[in-house]
Image 1 (cartoon, rainbow, N blue to C red):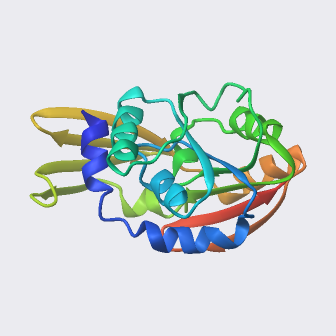
Image 2: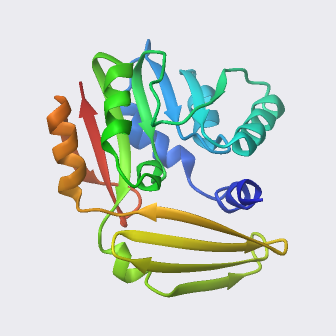
Length: 213
């Protein structure tokens, strides 16, 4: 049920604006992997702009919604069910992990290693992570809304853990994310041999990182 709620709640994100931020890091010939593509909004944006892109996600329900989007928009690409903690078995020029994908992992070293191995030399890994301040900002957070869908959302934080309780259509999904110091991510990138830049971007709650192999 979370996939359906996620898709509806993510519908009003300005994907064109996110694409314009990403675009300078793309070349026309790049193969792009949207890692953690979710229900496919960003993947759709990439394809609509003529990029060669595929989507991977661990959640088959998300991929099913993404496939429906592609069909409705008369677009085709490959979608794969895949856990980023496992080797990719493919290579690409760019790997994206947007919308706090990396925050879903308690430990990030294996994920980053797999991404490094899947990139061609000179390839780019582009991702965002929550700033550590969100742990205090969202401590005991709750909201109840009717638009764009009726839902209730509660967040509890403890240490590095941020636990979301999403109530939608009389079901409650529990989603866990992990928020660490920025240096944790940067040190891991450095150990693997990435060069990187860090900037603020569209969402002020997040760091945006472009790492080059």
